Length: 397
Image (cartoon, rainbow, N blue to C red; front, side, top):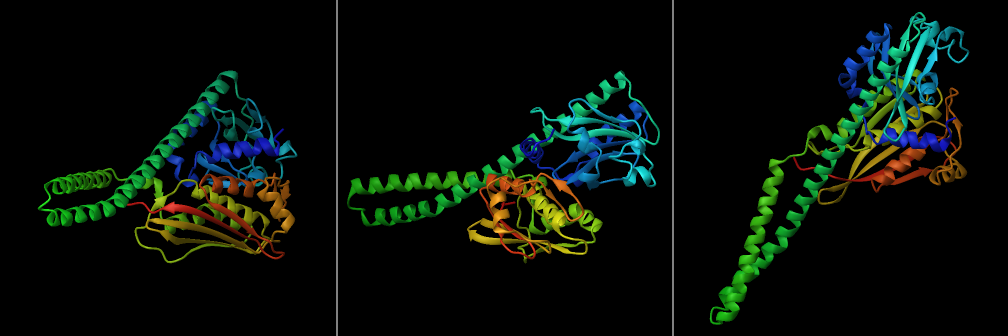
């Protein structure tokens, strides 16, 4: 049985991969096809499940990108130790009304293997499906388990690569800032030393003293120049960076389908940005996505959800990234806000019966705090307003 605590740990494990779900299909294309070929089924999917959504990051035999987690068969698979099988979906009360069963696809058979991390958190499932019963033999089961293991290992590699690049980006920027910060004072010391040398020409001891200061200052300036030159030669990988407009476009592409299901007017707006201004993309899609999904869940049909993105100047190349989500849902009472910020949110139901453990905003708070940001909810009876502030460093390219 999944409890709020175990589900939160599972969601944290998934968030640590920091994935852009729309950019993974090529990574697992061959593995999803192999799963279908091995089992002789028409369809094979690699699905990752967050708090609200099942994201199909690779598909074979059917075109699909996402569906509400509530409608998913794989949400049952992630609760199993080994596998989950349904011989006839049309005879199972949990699934017989689903569109993939009584609609055009008319699926009947389902077999899923949980995708478990090294810490045993099931972040998704590898599943095969067909229009007729296709019982999986022990031999095929073992092959599917190997494919599932390979999928998780690929995800782990992607996570490690991303963490390395983000760490490298941060190190380069810190090194640049340190070099810049040193250059100003050292220039001042060098200038004063030169003036002092000229004025102390009759005092040999003092002239030598100021000459040593000037020599040391020149060496330090040379070192800072070398550091800055080295940083320019080792530019950060732009695949791990984003801009305000790119972040907005990504969020719209990912969550417009969810809004469309409920005929919600969804948009992401940005303030005027400086061209070429880039920053680390770490965890930003996870934060923005959870905010948007939560707003869509509690906004009634034909309502509106707007995400505002802006960059506020702080100092030098440091800025504050602002996420502000407004919706036409029921709003937040002071009591509900207290539950969320203290991590005691209870199971909640959306406007179309969407169920959950009330963890969507807890995940946002967790991720924001990991980035040393601020998370706030405005108490009001009509419409929800949530604001997130995250300190960022503008990257030099």
